[in-house]
Image (cartoon, rainbow, N blue to C red; front, side):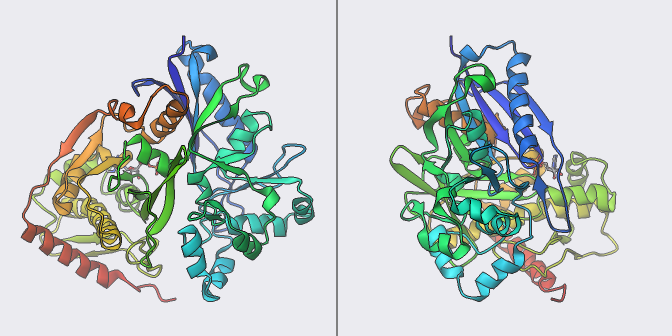
Length: 497
Ligand code: ADP
């Protein structure tokens, strides 16, 4: 009898498999890290065969761990590190180059040129994105330009491009299916999110043959079946979404205005904007949240570069805490930050400031300042940066947000979440299952296979661990935000170009 949904969560540093039951409980989890390849400064690659081998081994082990059978698995949902680019040979199935990871900056000059030439506007209007090396298009172009014979092969229709989801689908189906979902397609910078098609003008701009591209399908859909030679059984692949979008789905952000923040190394905020894409000039990214049946839902996305990274810096850089967890205990030892502000602009600042020349800063120090104040101010900086992004989204969409749903490693910090509620003036909801990325992939799969009849049925699974209710007056909020902005203003443009 079927009782499990398997989620493959292919991340930047590890491949994970989580097996859920129908109620969304974690039944088994196996994770394997794999090497990061840094051929030069600013370049980041993965070995696609290692991505595949680690992913398939954790899937098998996760099932073995609970003594499960493939016949008990309804299907597989896939979620993945986004934008990372793989090109492989259609005939041999072998990659022609390493995967170029989303973090890789090798195409920064080319993207800078595009921006200078004024392509930013059409890229934004068509794809919702910015001309940045982060997205797949310039990475594909780089491989075609740099690998011997690649362009000729591409023209002859012998190569396939895929983000990591496509690569896994291809391998799981024994090379039968070359596909991706709307959410992943929307991160390539080649997909027109208005017309829902690969964009001829952009393909020409990046000199990429149409024949290399995967077919784009709804996020909840039967993509195909695993090849019996691969897993020993034909299991349907029923759900596919990029990691942040999968987390939005796993948090049950199904309605317009529903929003989640993932507090990891960086923070990723996504807001469901319903069936309407909002295009703005303020650095907010417009993306496809998911496709369900004939309908496509959009999301506004903003990111904070240094979130948990700032806590890591307290531990590894300053050495004033022993563990991330200790940050909360120390911060609780003081009433407030004692007028101290930390701006963790280690790599410049993202939305809404967009200043690559900003640098980190601690300001407001007096003789009364202790390490507890600095730790507390660092935790608060995560809350302020999140508030800045939400404020920007609100200004650009006018969509009213009722609550913020949270997940990610740093959402374990309750002082952070209470401060976040206070400074936003919004309730914060932390779910019982914080494996929201994998859960989202499992839900998308379950929906396609009829395990769930509707998103309303999925919503019934949602259990909340804790709600943080906002305290503090409007006046307090306004004053704190004003001071934070004064601090940020002093950090901008510090490093000279
Ligand atoms: P990622 O997926 O980006 O690796 P995770 O979601 O695993 O991130 O979260 C890890 C991050 O969360 C680390 O940067 C760590 O410093 C931070 N973190 C973990 N626990 C806490 C805590 N109790 N308080 C503050 N930050 C924390």
